[in-house]
Image (tube, rainbow, N blue to C red; front, side, top):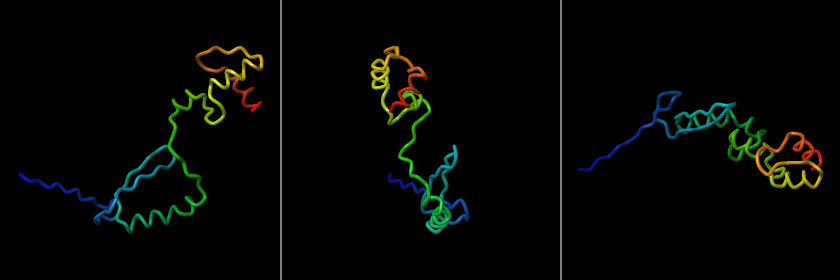
Length: 110
């Protein structure tokens, strides 16, 4: 038995047939909307002045990931910071969080 299943998208703005689903984020919320190509063009035109001035984000880092990295992405990993701290007279453990005063001193020096 042959079976064909079709999904027909309906434009969420005007009720016509939609051509695609558009996903976007604003603030802390993500959105998804089905739109015709004409309404996608309207959305892109409306956002264009903002997109032209915005910085593109290349993937998001969760709070947990940021905290685990000490929130210091690109400024040295914890192993590097611990080594620097020891070379500069700070006492740091081999595991766990790097103390805030050590982090502040590392950032000031680098």
